Amino acid sequence: MKGDNTVIPAALRAFVRGGGLTLAWRGALTAALVCVIGLLPWLSRTDPALTVLKARSAEGDPTPEALRAVRDELGLDDGPLWLLVHWLGGLLRADAGRSWVSGTDVLPSAAQALGVSLMLMAGSLTVAVCTAAAVCIRTLWSGSRRRLGGRAAGGTATAVLAALPEFLIASVLASVIGVQLGLLPALGWYGPQWMVLPSLALGLPAGAVLGRMLDDLLPGAFVEPWALAAAARGIPPTSVARQALRRCVPALLPNLGLFAVGLSGGAVAVEQIFDIHGLGRLTLRAALAQDLPVLQTGTLALIVLAATAGVLARLAARLLIGPALRDGALHSLHRPTPPAPRTLPLLYGALLAAVIGLGLQRDPLALDTAARLQAPSWMHPFGTDALGRDVLARIGHGALNTLAIALAVSAAALVTGALLGLLPRLSRPMADTVNAVPAVLAGLLVTGIAGGGPWTPALAVAAVAWAPLATHTSALLEQERATTHLTATRALGAGPWYLLTRELLPAVLPPVIRHALLRLPGIALSLAALGFLGLGSQPPSPEWGLLLAENQPYAERAPWAVLTPAAVLALLGALAVTAAGGVRRPRLKPRSGQPAQPAQLVPEPPQTPLLTPPTHTP
Image (cartoon, rainbow, N blue to C red; front, side, top):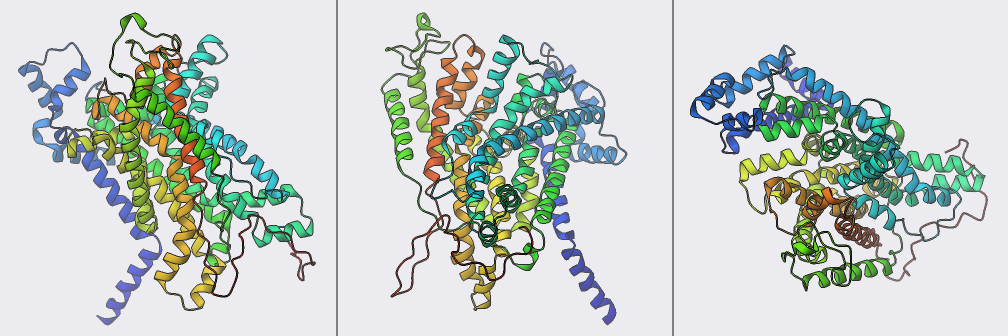
């Protein structure tokens, strides 16, 4: 008995060390999500037979006999538990059932949609990497030649690109390049040429966000001892830049994995514009039609894809860092830096306030059918929409509701992401699972659980918006725990609370806060997009996302009706990012009797030769 008692704890410890506990937690989350999706028709308090009948034929007469036939055919009277068990039993035999709407086998259609989404994801990631490289090229060139000085990270152009909605970029590319110029095909999915425009629409905003995050880390890499030693020894700048990338990229790879999954399941709007039958569009249609076999299969595929991408991203990060992560030999990338200049945030804030103030003085609901789609003029500075309403008035009145809710959701996502990021074993499987759920599906689930209302979009977006911030926090925290100064501080007797509050959080929170501010315009768009789908505020509400969606069909005849809300949204992104440039790690207070040393972004190289020059290229 004694031998058995010692074997069981040893096996349990081996199970935990081998990642078995994390795997079990990931499986529990997947099972819970699939079960909740299986309850969607009953949670939404609608008749699934009526929804399926309408999805099969919009002109069908929902007579009691027809609804009874649908219930008997699908087995709805047996309850959701029997349907879930029946679907899982078939899944073990490689049979995902048949679609409730079309009657076709689910697995072949889901596999085909997954293949299309993977190809689109590959093209979008290529565009995103190229865009991120273009954003960081100036910092790489200056830092590898020790010419950074006190230059702040680039933000305005990147923020504008990151704030542009994907469906707006897709609409412009499809209408201008695809239709007017005829350079590339704009509809369908028949070969490599058809994936160029949707890849650009998805990859440009994602690359701008990733490039801004990478550009924020690079200056810290160029002041590490290896970079100073390389400069003193005369290492070529290209080698220094390459090693700086290797030093900074691991902190972003987990977020790149989240982007990859988001480019697959979250590309619903782009897939609809370009008529691409991908996994996101398939899942959305199934959710709206309550086609449970298709919805559960598509969601399960997205969860598996998210888990695979997350594991591969973290494995690649560990391989790039090497044994320094295990041995605690890293240096902190987040050092005290001079505050960013305050001119640009004040300029952008004043301009945004002026636009909102002028709009509030006008009536956003006044109709003038004689002034439909008028160009900008003195009477209507931003033009009019399809109903003759003043676009400036609608932007001004929509700003109050849009910005207030977006700020509240961003703050909640920041706090949740930062707290969960401190517990990576708990948060990583949760982030991968939550990120696999498209925002529209999350909205439907929240509506079914909490009911409809003006705060339903906020709850739905907040339920998924914390995942990138938690992933970013855990990635930075893992590297910060492996720094030499933290090891030395711990050796001097510092306790866990001191290390957390005085070392880890001051180093990790500033870049995470800047990341949260960079996502503020995207959160505002997600809120309004859910409202447009009937999950929140309804027309004629002047929310910014509704303005873009309502005026999108008239983009060719009246481009100002779409470009002006997009420009104001880009201005919000520029304001958020430039204001976030001043969020830096607080300087340590000097001891009494010691003068404070000014922080330098790039310290001067040593004037004396190194006693022990490095024997290997960094």
